[in-house]
Length: 463
Image (cartoon, rainbow, N blue to C red; front, side, top):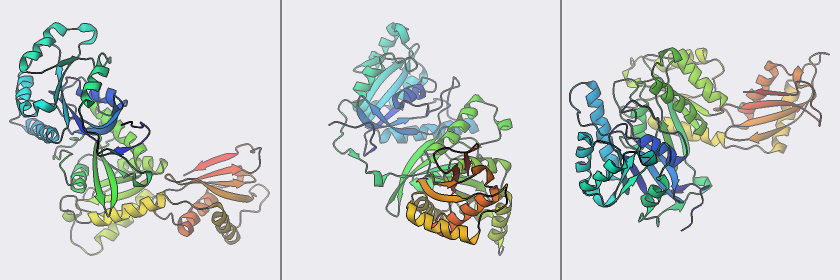
């Protein structure tokens, strides 16, 4: 069966990368998906949640999963309890795997390696062993000793340099069942949601509730999530893909390289989103960081929902929500279009309303207005509020077109772009939102010079 790398597929075989911390699982994951998706760092135990992504391996589409590292000592303090949660997720992921690639490191076999090999005995028929960090034949002699643990074959690779990775890829897909794989119709493309916000606002709890899983590790310790964790679910017959991101803190608070990369992954995830759920702790309220996150989403043209989580902990006083919403509107200024939804990710209160709102926002993001009806509406807007008539402020609006959806963008062609003030741009945007059905999303406007020779300052881009 031939597969097209430009298409999106579903019902894919699951290939899981497993092993102890710091053997190079995330480096190999990034090489296989051809992106820097999983965070790599010399510090052990960086990956905690399983990181999943569709990948083309040896010409075949698979669902590739990078797991947290297996650690032998998992008793005692908070860190050890977190390691236990990481291991629990890893073992759950192994259960659904069609192929498991055990990553070992060239050199001495550790106690963690031996215990993990023991854990993997029941999966022997699905298991491949790859010894990493053997670039240029380094320590290959010692690496062959791994055959004594019952592996039928051992692959000597370098995830960082690519040595023999192609050979491993061929073995990874050999014998997998691709008979159920289907190309996804463009109309069935999942709605992509990114969960963003400060640490410990309930992003992972909401992700797990929506996906009816425990894919994201939930802990009271802030900063538990580091990588972008993907999940999938269906709501009202519509497919969703959700990206649970690391909590975004102020730069002054970001002191570790690992957290720096986590934050950058979270911000970059917005490029893949249709809608951003900005998670806000209802008790703590808004922060300057919340406003910066929202501004990033707004500038990218993403739908935005301000999610007031932990609403079940708020006082049961009449008009509490109205008071909180009014304060948000005051602090956010131009974000009046973004819905504010109170929820409890813990008990599920408000989650249906949140998802109904997301469906409404997505419909607006995909909405297209033909040029004819758009310019008929423009004629009415110009009659109701004509452009200024002064010698320095005069301009004529000739016509408008919608040039894109998701993100939604309009171009207005005018006689003198430099004369169009911010107030008139706001007027046009507000009429678009009110009259054309874009009430809940950001709308971008370009003001361009009409004719073939734009005047100086001939284009203004305004969000």
